[in-house]
Length: 403
Image 1 (cartoon, rainbow, N blue to C red):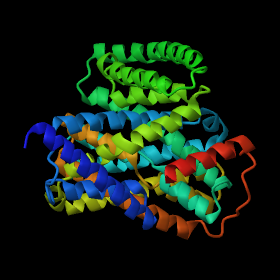
Image 2 (tube, rainbow, N blue to C red):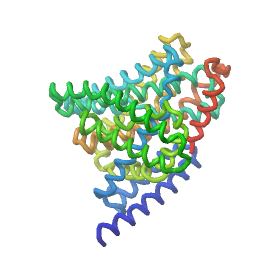
Image 3 (tube, helix red, strand yellow):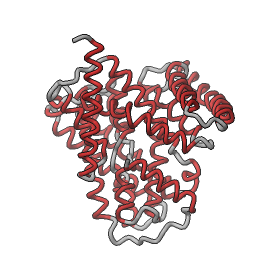
Image 4 (cartoon, rainbow, N blue to C red):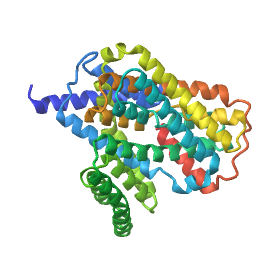
């Protein structure tokens, strides 16, 4: 069978497996990404080997990563970041610092080098609010003080995580003084040029009711991603995230979020998550059970203590702070993206990559259980800082996440 035929049957198996596994996961009240990752493990060389890795699949997977971070950027509500106050901000900072430091110490104890240890810590900084938002909504806490703090902290957490990743990739990639100067110049220049390009594109496309406008936006997003890596020495996903943030401030935001979710989650994201599962080496994981276990403990306690203490410093009660910390435990798409980036660049090996995927899956399972223990007893009074328009956007975003 030639390479084209292998690609076609491989894509067919990937998309079918992603669809079926996602439906099973949702039926079991788990995030769809959980089932899709497991489907990839089954299709990969560790289990059945039905779909071999290829350059074409890797390329499509890369496009999937770019679209995922573009959508994440669109859904970064800068207005909400200003409104959530000190508690959410401190919870986000603590939720990044504590797990990163804990993972670094564990990795160094097991003999990993400085670069690999820093990168392992970076993986654990991520937070996925999808699971927490679903549980908050189910139990009636979505629009409460605690719910608002968790969602706001998760937004800030993602921004900090992307910044940390950008710095780590540049420094650990052997960046010289020239590279740091180039990075320092690229960020303000890209913001200035990006604002102009996005403003120009929005003005030109607002009167266009056809789907052609999305093609132009997609081209701009891919150009942002290329420029970040080729000109700025950053990860391509940083450029995609920046493009999403800039377009998220325009009147095209809702249409682009819908387009990004359609393009990303219907085709390219399933390919990314399944191929990520395929890269997970079960045998490498079995060789490091203690390391994986300790990494999981750090992943959970780091968020609970770091985010919880941050919320406590922001004048939340002890019980409210515990709930905020628990709500930040689940990792998700961003953690997986960082792990894949580390593996593909050679910073982390198969053992660390496999451990990272397992930690992501298990924190996703643990978060709903922990929230159902910590939330009962907290007041369900709606948070007065949530205006009507933002509540509507919030409900719409949660429905997209659950879909």
